Each structure stands twice: as C-alpha cells, then as structure tokens.
Amino acid sequence: MSGICNGRVAIITGAGGGLGREYALALAAEGAAVVVNDINQAAADRTVADVVSQALKHWPGEWIDQSDPKAPHEAGKLNLTTEKAFHLLSWQPRWNFETAVQKTVEWYRSMHEGANPAELTQRQIKEYLKD
Image 1 (cartoon, rainbow, N blue to C red):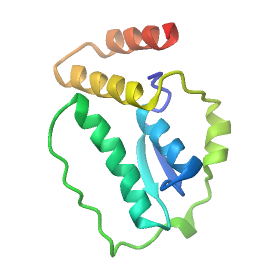
Image 2 (image 1 turned 60 degrees about the vertical axis):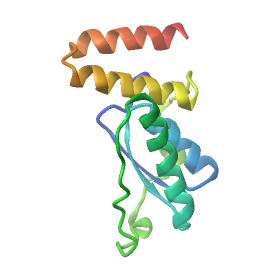
Image 3 (image 1 turned 90 degrees about the horizontal axis):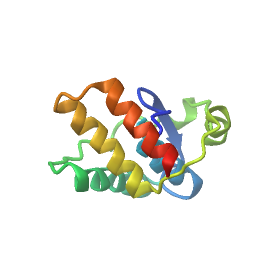
Image 4 (image 1 turned 120 degrees about the vertical axis):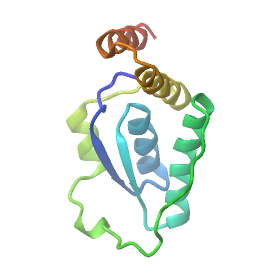
C-alpha cells in the first residue's frame, strides 16, 4: 500500500465487472473509500463483498450489508470516469489485491492500537517500495 488514496473517496461506475471492478478493488486496497456503482446490482454487490471479505481475513469482525435497493441511482449525475482517475493519479500497483488489503488492514489496526502514524506510514512505504 502506497497510501496514495488514503483519505480520498473514489466513485467507480461499472464497478461490478471488468476494468471498473479492478479499479474498485485496487483503489480500496490503496486506502480509498470506494463507492461501488453498477447498473447490475448483483455484480456491484459482489465487488463490495469481495473487498469486505478480504479485509475480514486480516481483521476479523462482522459485516452487515445495509445497502438500500430503493435508493436513487446516481450514475447519471457522475462526470468522473475510471480512466480519467487512473491517468490523474498516475498509479501502478506493486502488490496484488490480497496483499494490498492486508497491508491496509494492518495500518488501520495499528492506528487503532495507538501506533505513531508517521512511523507506521514510513515503514509501510519502505515495504511497498522494497517489493
């Protein structure tokens, strides 16, 4: 995890499959809060479930899906595409999805346990650059 997306929100349309799904998984692994959107609700739900289940492997807990199937669909109001976000960030992954989620969960768990944020971030950046 490079931390390039920490504190950012990524809204991914078409996140239920293909490149949109891969962007959603990668940006989540890099620390972004990802809003998953797809015209195929089942596909979008699968992407969210994959991110959550991978995170739960590293920090066990409970997850309850509280999505609202009656909520309005926002895709018609979005102006940012995944291609534009990719080019603006100039980001290329070094870790696979599982490793990136593991490192992200480790970061949040360490912060929860009182770790020094600067030292923790510097250590993970060194690990990321080493790999």
